Length: 185
Image 1 (cartoon, helix red, strand yellow):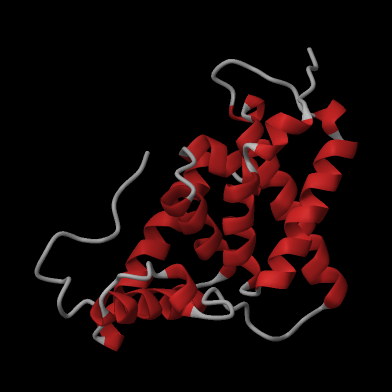
Image 2 (image 1 turned 90 degrees about the vertical axis):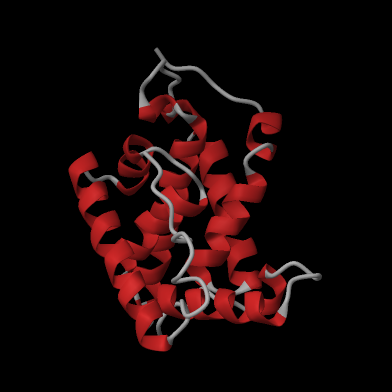
């Protein structure tokens, strides 16, 4: 059974879509374009979405991330870019609260640089599960991969991220405390 959604339903997801688009593209303007393209595609293809209780495919949020992922992949294929994606974007300072300490800003920049060095498939899973707090099933739906693949990519991505942060000494002050990467199921 197919159901529809309203423009207001879409509006509720725009901030998360923008954040994920920014992480994917690394550029504010490209992220805005990706978000706009995603919303346009979602609206024109809204008949393809169906709500379902307990079904990741029924989650509008997961479906929108799947649409964004597909629009992004198609755009990358079309442009055949060879330059790496920049998660830090225009300025790492934009992602740090204005009252954050210099040490916190440095840690955020180190994490962003480490994220940039991850393979795309691992970075996408970390962003969807860790940042956007999608369930494994929702992330798998968004990326069109099985839950086991999500779990595997997440595990390898987290481990690689830890290694990269250790190489850069980014976890010097946070290594003694609890890990800043938390498990989300």
